[in-house]
Structures are given as C-alpha cells and as structure tokens.
Image 1: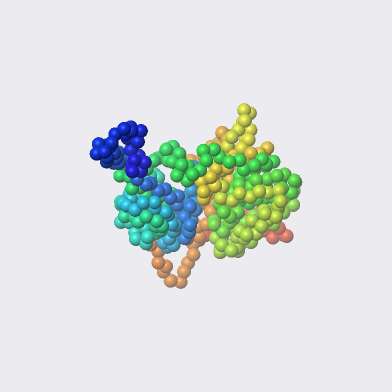
Image 2: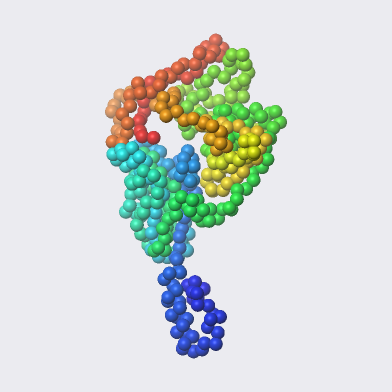
Length: 424
C-alpha cells in the first residue's frame, strides 16, 4: 500500500514501532497521502496514429503551427467515415476527455461551425460536439466518461464533411489534471509517445531533396543518375505534389521545348496524362511516380516526413535538415553536401534563415481545381453560411501554354467551371 499510494511515510521511519501504533501510523499516513499524490491515469492519443483513419485525411500542411500533423475530415459536404483506434485503459474509473481542435471559420467571425465532429467511446458519442469554439488550436473539453479497464475503442465521427480537424485526444482520471500547451505540450508529446530527446541521424548524402512534387522527383532522379547519393524527403505518402491523386492538377506543361528540348525527358517518364483537371485519382499515376524513384538505387525515399528545421554553418550554408515522421512523431536528421528546396513554398530556405517576402495580395495564381459544371437536375448541397460567394470572374484567367510539341499547342487548358467555394 505504501508504494501504491506514493506515501512519504517510509518503512524505515516505522522501525521499532510495534503493534497497534504501527498499524495506526501506516493507515493514517496512507489516507493522508492518497488524495494529493495518487494522480490517476492520463492517456494521450495522437489522431494521426489511429489504426484506421477511415475517410479522414492526414494533413501535414500546418504542422509547424499545430505542433504535429492532424486528421482532417475533407468530405466536400459528405461526412467522412469514422477514424477508429483502440487504447489500453490501465485502470477503470471516470475519465475527463479533451480533443485538441478549433472552429476553423471563427478567425473570420463567419456564421456556422462547419468542422463539427464527435468522439465515440466504445460506440457511444460524448455529448460534446467538437470543433465548435475557438479560432486557435486548443484543448476543447468533452466532459466525463466511465471507462472499464482494458481495451477501449475510440472513434472520430465527422458530422459535416466540411473539414473538421482533430490533432489529439486526452483522457485523464486525475481530477486536477490540465492539458499542457505551447512548449510544455511539445515536451509532453515526446514523453507520452516515448520518443527520444534528440533526433536520430538518417544518414549522410550528397544531395538532400525536400519536396516530392514534379520538381523534387525530377531533381532526385537526375542527381541519382549522375551517381550522387540522394535523399528524397516528402511530407505526403504519395509523390507528385499538386500532380498527385490527392490534389489532381494535371501536368499538361510544355516540357520538351526551346533551346533544351531534352530537358524535360525525365518528367515525361512519370508525368500524368490526365484528360482534365481535376480528373479521377487513377489518372494521376501515383504508383508510376513512386516506381520511377524506387528504380534508382542511389535514391533513399522518405515518404511521410515533414521538414521542420534546418541547420547552417558559420557561413550560412545548410548542413542538415530535420524532418518529422508524421505518423510516429519521430524526428530524423538528414545531413548533406547539397540541398534542394522543392517544397513549392521555400520552407527550407526560410528555416535556414534566408531572406524572403510574402506578397499580401494579388498572388492567388492560376487554379485548375475550381470548375463549373452544369447538371440537368438540381443537386443537393448542404447550407454553407460560412462560405464566400465567388463567381468565375473572381479567379485569374488560365493562359494556354504556347509551347509546341509535335507541331501542336500544349499546356494548361482554360477551365471555366467552379465546383465549390469555402473559407480556407
């Protein structure tokens, strides 16, 4: 009992005390110590480690803001299938529950709460609907639940299909427990997940390419064929970036043109031939992209690794990049002689301290993802009071490429169809 209660009154203190008095002191000490020192159990569940993420997506785009990847219910107005996992509850009892989330339209003070979801415990939903308050990421309390010892099933149940998001779930039987935030949360994550304090070294490379879109794939393959030892680091689990099945922006570029007609031949090895943008997922040939990379013996491919730090020497030259393995939270350091930033938004340069500028407006760029489609019959669509009203004219014009392949014009074709509009 002394050890279980964490009692300060040790056995050595009781040496020489006999009979009734010894039993009395033991009982009194344990009763006094039990309340403040028996802290109960606290369980931490990263959403990205769920055994089955169902229809939810693992989103890495805001890892540096959130502190880790998270699950996103991107169903375009149709609720996503539940994400499920099983946890081990060490002791039966009442547990308070929190989910780390946000109301993603609260920043604009927009009406409605499109990111609503529930947490199910052994199939029963908590009364709280999460994602309904707070413009910033925070621990939203979900009340109490009675848990048995042993295996307990958790589920994230999407209610809207409009981008509900969950970073993690906390359960605690300690009445005084408060979820950590900020730097304390980062420290607690490592402790709860059993991660080392220092990242592991992933290796030494001639070239470290960060970003697995078209630029990153072509760079890595080209370098490998020149006998360089290459690490290709990609935050998603598929290659292609915007030209993958996840985003579905067709290639349609002029890669064989001008003074250097052979410059784009590597791109042609893995480029999609989608008939439209967006098109069906299979048109974007994720498997072919990965196969091209894996055929190169000089490339080490690291999917699901988010670059979050860069080290430089005294002269400002990058010496290493640290990436977070998005499903496990484990950190890996990639050391290299040369580095190539193919992230599409200059993140490695920014992490290394390079000067950069973000234009406040006028840089929306072309979009192939918004399209207008006329149907013979009216289509059901949920009410979206939080959405922006956009027309075709609100989008930049798409300019057709003037490149010539085989005497024919090629490039992005203008698209004048809009599918949906929402706050981002």
